[in-house]
Amino acid sequence: MSLALDFLVDLLDLEDIEVNIFRGKHPDGERQRTFGGQVAAQALMAAGRTVDRGRVHSLHSYFLRPGDSSAPTLYEVDRIRDGRSFATRRVVAIQHGRAIYNMQASFHEDEAGVEHQIAMPDVPAPESILPTQQRIHSEFGYAVEWPALPHPIEQRYIGELPWSAQRSRDPRERLWIRADGELADDPLLHACIVTYASDMNPFDAILAPHDVRWDDGTFMGASLDHCMWFHHDLRADEWMLYDMDSPIAHGGRGLARGSLFSRDGQLKVSLVQEGLTRRLRPTNADPGHDHSASGPRP
Image 1 (spheres, one colour):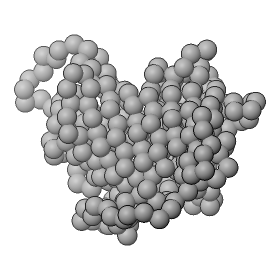
Image 2 (cartoon, one colour):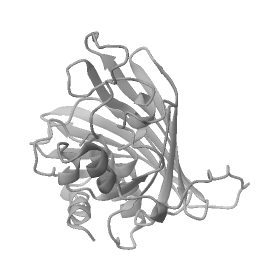
Image 3 (tube, one colour):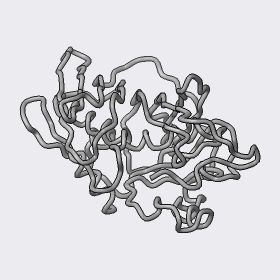
């Protein structure tokens, strides 16, 4: 296990404060707001800690306020229902006395039913694609911060990097992802790490057709809501194809849809995310100048 993944596993080891109340810590660093995937993963861990049987099959959540990365987060779990087949939990993440995130999660034991699924796209194997850090070094040099930061999730992009001026302008993104090391055999831990990773890339599909920068004061982006459906048991430390598209961006919001497939073609997770795509002020750029981000977002 890499040091970065070991640290992520430690972040997901929540502190029990009281019955149905947990406390999550944050990584040290200069990030102004907490990464949404971290809050979602910790909230799911809090919910799962209160469930005796079944595995998570869906979660529906809203990001309400930016998280403060300098303060711990409290997770209050409401045990809404424990039925014969399903258990439902509501989790509210709180900082400074205010809710920053709300999740509703459902747990279920698999049972017999009808079976079908869509086919996985035909894509190159992850071993045939250079690691993302090498590609960033080659295209952007050492000026960007991303390669120097710890990354618990390994990513290998299919096609051009999403921040490249040569990228396709289609609102689609495909890449292979996996945890950077071997994890313990804990289904809840694997689901939480996939939840963490799932918030890293949907914006790439939303912004692919557009010339915007995150660092010039003209654009503001943030996750608004995040919904996931877990169809099969999964391992976050094995390669999964993350296939995303964005059917629409309008009204200051963009929508992304995603599917996560195992290498053998089994559809493991489906997800939908809506993000804020706010123009803060108009740009006076040349039409021929590419205003996509000059490098990946940390």
